[in-house]
Image 1 (tube, protein in one colour):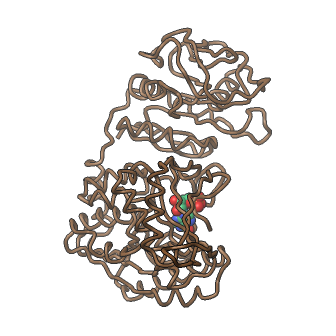
Image 2 (cartoon, rainbow, N blue to C red):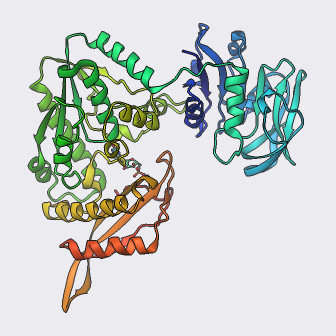
Image 3 (cartoon, rainbow, N blue to C red):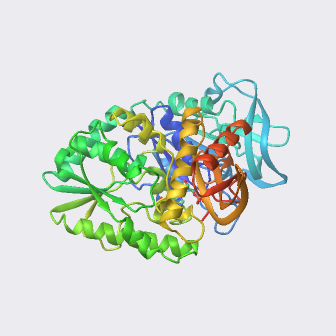
Length: 508
Ligand code: XMP
């Protein structure tokens, strides 16, 4: 399959570049700048150098491996990537007087193939503190803003540089510019699609697994569910899913998960009821980190025990997806990824299983498309993320059975109303938290003294940054009224309007 290789120089947008290209049905991969392959891969039709926070003159700045030019395929440098190219060929890069950040307008000097069908004036997104002052010989400036060179190209039409970020949505014609590069300049074929992926994966899974047994930790979330569906299609009854009810799940979740795979008849799910065990080990624990550790360890122990009764299993399947892979191979070294906290079925250091991660090259939106193609229900596929420690990190302070019940009831009202009013798919993640604080209220003629709860709803594309959802006042009031009327134990409801950063999405 044709592909575009993205060399990661530390940009926060590198995953976005890859996604934009895959949205064109062309396969793309992100690799750290220092691991450029030694052997030419004929499937690679173009190379993109991502942006990065460094300056080309910094002592330890990520460098350009000149062997990329031996491949004799088109190269596009974005932001830092362009500066590297200019520096490499003898141009001058220097600090700008003022950091250019945000929207700018570029004016085209030449409508080359990269700018085919692009307006002569176009809004782009800039984020740089260095700029190219002089382009090397053999290059021309193809566009500029009032204060900087915005794009360059060599005379042969093989090497390109963009000072702005075509991959972010604020660059109005960014998709078209990237498509011009990928489809018209690199001539990459649009061969990346979900149904082919299913066919190839099934073939590969069968080849690897043969007649052996696989176990999978099922959380009810999108990634593990789609992994289960794919494996089920590939190997049927050779798959056993282990689902642990920690007691810290959403209301009715265990039941829903057990019934929820209606389209996967005969999917073998083993339910382990560990509610008592979790509540016992969490007794008296109030510190968030300690809670996370205890929940993680208990989960691991329960899963280990469950695995022990499947000694015939050779493979452990996991719903690892591409952002986790990119993060762990990032130029900054393995960073603390969301999943590594302890995802359901987190792999022990010395596990005796072979890992099976069939979604490891897919982005979340691709996993969702795959799930739909595999006939999983839309509700399941479009589910908001749910953290491994579950409600344990949404009940602030000590966790008790009573509080779990209160929170489950409140949370299910919020989610139900979001769905009913068409907001569920418009927000990225929504939930309720329960505070260890009681306030005074009045209901009927009665004075109440009950817990405080808070609604949280965020919109985000990557969960690294997030804005609070702009839910209308009438809707928040409706949810608040229902919670206070229907949930025994809560008499006041707040709405969290903290963005991330400085806040995190979860409260603990
Ligand atoms: P924060 O709170 O870090 O959350 O802004 C970002 C995203 O990660 C989820 N999250 C977790 N997911 N195990 C998980 O599998 C965890 O321990 C965990 N902690 C946070 C959170 O729900 C949000 O989607």
